[in-house]
Length: 106
Image (tube, rainbow, N blue to C red):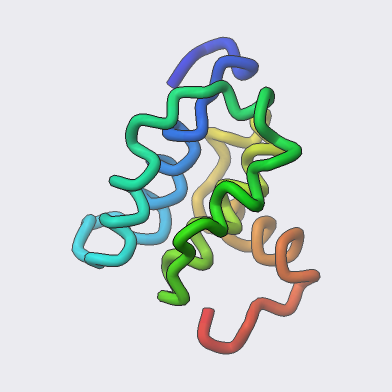
């Protein structure tokens, strides 16, 4: 991860989010989500306006993928929290991206 938070890329955020929702890397849908964005090396600050649409392309309804997408969106706007506690990040992302009420399947 870059020390300059303005250089955090979409792929950095996707790797972080997928490591949080699937620490063992055993969920095939999460692995596929991570692979889809593995080469997306654009700084996230440059694509914030289109990030939600970008992540929705080919979106999976698998609950861990939905949560990983929420984490990427949350961290895209809050790169200062990149190294915070994973459980806290999940809570904050759920609150921010689902208005505090994530879908039951998530």
